[in-house]
Length: 481
Image (cartoon, rainbow, N blue to C red):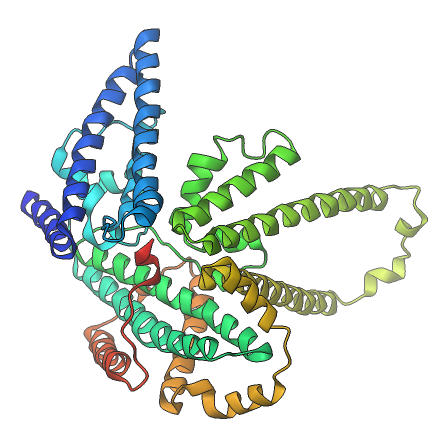
């Protein structure tokens, strides 16, 4: 299996070389540098001598500052200073992977990887290195150290993932984005702008979730299991729940390596709120230099601060109500024996209906809040962000009706196909929610007939997506970060 590992490394390096020789040079440089640092960190951190521990701390801090500084230089300083600067491909993703690995070694939670081949594969595995998921060394290095086994079920599972990801990205995301861009650039107002931003919520989801599935599926075809990056985020019932489901690899990285080291929620509510704002502003900054990303991160930070404060208030009220309920001197607790004759089935049905309505109302509110926050993310600049929000307040009922009748510029056939993908995505999300996100693994257990049917469907949707009248070739949104 050493040949397989070398093949995967060289495939990744060839991919980088084709895209940009500078990207390959930087990737190899970071790989070799962090490999040596990891071994030195383990050697110094494991010594009982105070001098060795101090050396490890200084080396770790220096390395993290250096990696972050290079990231900032390329994404901010060089970007604004030099028009022709080439930002290394996948820089944000594998830089975070390396920082996470070195942190675990410094904390003595993991041993430094001694095999350069395995480590090079960890840093430069081509399906995930350009746009995530941001892998964790604990899971990936364990797989790379073991014998890589490729089973027929792995290949089928991977191809199902790739097929569904391609469908989401190349048909749904690209065609809907074309519609959104056309309408917003042609002076959309009022309800039309609001609808376009709601549609953009699905554009960015289909684009990034689609890419993640393609990356995870490609890795699976080579016998490598990458971490999930999305768990039906628009089924979230709170903003905190949304961030447990959206871009999981990034949100958990910030939680483990920024939020918790800052103190998390262990140092009081005010410190918790400040830490939350820091994390989400940094999350926005990670996406790029545009002020819109920072605003987007700040909005989500505010959402979470308010949500946590409200949770604290309601938690206090629930405790008070519970104490009153358990008080034997409370007259309301002295129930009559006749009340026990109430039908349990009626009570349970009423509770289920009430719970269903309540949860879906929460999901709708969260979706609207998240869509509202996507505005600066889409706009990029401050002036355009303010302008987009302002246009939402302008009346355009007649134009909106005309837009509905014309499909807002999208051809009828394309619109129908996108709606089918939307319905299919909802169905898949609901199934995944109930079955621990194992749909594609379950599909791989079926016979060759279903697989052949899947190949045919994949071919058809790919042709429709790439060669349809509404298609507009565009890059992966998160590939630019």
